[in-house]
Image 1 (cartoon, one colour):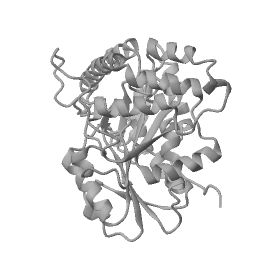
Image 2 (cartoon, rainbow, N blue to C red):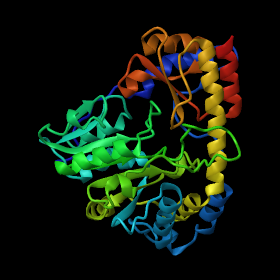
Image 3 (tube, one colour):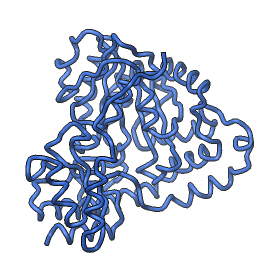
Image 4 (cartoon, rainbow, N blue to C red):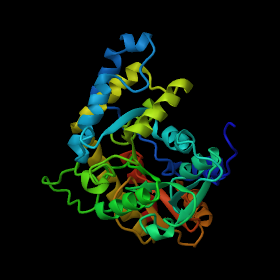
Length: 382
């Protein structure tokens, strides 16, 4: 049957004209649109990559399910940062070639088709919808997936996307709300697909004091109080792109229901969706290097604070997000493209809210350098 066609407003070529305007501005362009890390990869990761460059897992074919060491590192990471015991809830794991691939192939690998419905938030990461379309399934967008009444009685619902902390809004779901989603999905035999790629990027209640615990993560769908002690019908996605600046390494994983993971792993093996062996070693190092994660957390908290203050000075009504790495604002003009044009004149590029289902909003990314954020703040305050 193959992939089905997809349609989406998520097309970065649409901002090319605004970039040309921004590049011509005094001081040049400051790109706050794409959430691409700019900070160094931790030393531990680079050393692990180099050390594994001629391992049997490098010159031979690597394991689809991940090396024993990588699988152990994932389990350790869940225990240390997410308060999750994978073994106790009968969960399995499989590495993915980045989280976007994991999201885009999810509906296809779960064998969804034309009579199946996948629920997602109206304002969300565009690849949820694209992945559902590729499988030939139907998309149901709701204002809030935690409002289970909006989808529980809809015929054909097979999966529900959850994203906490949310890209683009920064919203964080409580454990109680997530537990309600899991319970309702199980009642109708649907799978909960929890995108938790920004799990360690929580800012709610942060005080910048020495007593803060930057690894006090947001609630996980596999936490015992959320999933009722069982991974059945729950899949969680996570990526090292933001916590360890490893976007180019394409290191992510899916964890959860062991029967679903086993089936997906078998297909992934046949189509060669496998992380290279040396990268698996680097990934294990990144998961274990929590000191580097804490340092990166501090960088992002500082940048977000500067960016929020600057956007307020420019006239946007905004606060520090609860989580994730973006500042989500309502366009001053009421239209994202009009604001994009005005911002481009002072050299600043944001991401249009239309990409995420909200054309009245814009997203500003804090994944720019300290210098870029400071320069953007200066221009916004003029």
